Image 1 (cartoon, rainbow, N blue to C red):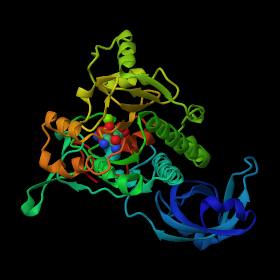
Image 2 (cartoon, protein in one colour):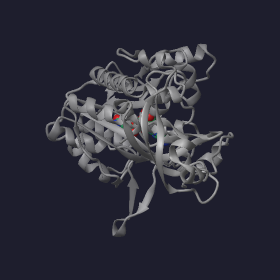
Image 3 (cartoon, rainbow, N blue to C red):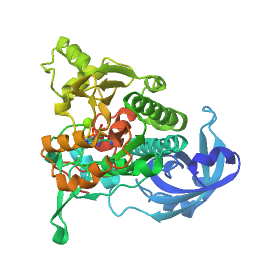
Length: 429
Ligand code: 4AD
Ligand code: MG
């Protein structure tokens, strides 16, 4: 039996198993706050109901005692819809062997991260992981309904996908160096000629030297790739997917959003169409707001913060200068200095959550790009091969799950959105 199902057991007996996350006594009554992963409930333990021996045993209960409580489910007299357990009996699994280190007082982020294995139990961290789970399920559900087939890209790869400066290398037997994948995109491009529309969803790795609130060295990416989809349709797919995921969180995680004190009005507004501006327009706007960004520059972190504070919905920034973007992006036929790409930026200062583009599908052009970017041609032999046998226009994108979780939950730093964050200065626990 689980706490979330208690409403179906009103005035009946129930047995719950979990952990005591708070408690207090008042005379011959103890109020035990129990959590079991599905929710939180108050157990009321009355000396006269359990008898002298059990009452004495109950005095041993401390924070994080693991316990089974049996009692009658009652509805709170003043809060309809809130259920409590009138405890008749209990069984202790374990009394903690020492005082639980995460108490009621405020702790600094480094202390909490050092104790991440325990911090995960706190209501806010519980809520974040629940929202993360809903976002993942929402993504799979939408992709499945829209003919995208899950396709698992490899993690050990022979070459870079997103630039050589953030590659993690490992020794690979007699074959020399292998690299941890930065994105499964290139492999998905092979898959589309078999499956049409595909996506992967897994951990990717970036040796990010930067310590920002938006960067991890290991994070979860969903890459999607679709044949016969051009730039404009690529954006439509993204705004529908993201809206669906956010609406699913609103449908399933009201309790979690309340714990996180997230303003749900802002999320209710997340529906297509999202805003669209070109990189050139963004640069102009940022210049007016005091940024020193140049016409051919990528948007910096501060630029993204400034820009996205102006909007109440996600914004596509389209057509970046080709020189700041990856080699595989198709050029804009109207002005080949720019690409047919878009970054999707989340509002409220969150910034980039998706990078995507139409892909270069011409054999000669792609060879030229690989040479311009000084990439090892041999490692990309298979990739350019795809442009020789039935090449088609195609597009795709990748989202960083943690950045979406942070935005949806209203969390400042993405390190709280992944179970065990890996950053330049943190590898444990
Ligand atoms: O913009 P990126 O680098 O794009 C790609 O990797 C493409 N190959 C994706 C594709 O087209 N299939 O990364 C995609 C997203 C970013 O928008 C961001 O949300 C996230 O991944 N991301 C990070 N998240 C956390 N920590 C980091 N170091 C990240 N780097 C990128
Ligand atoms: Mg990007």
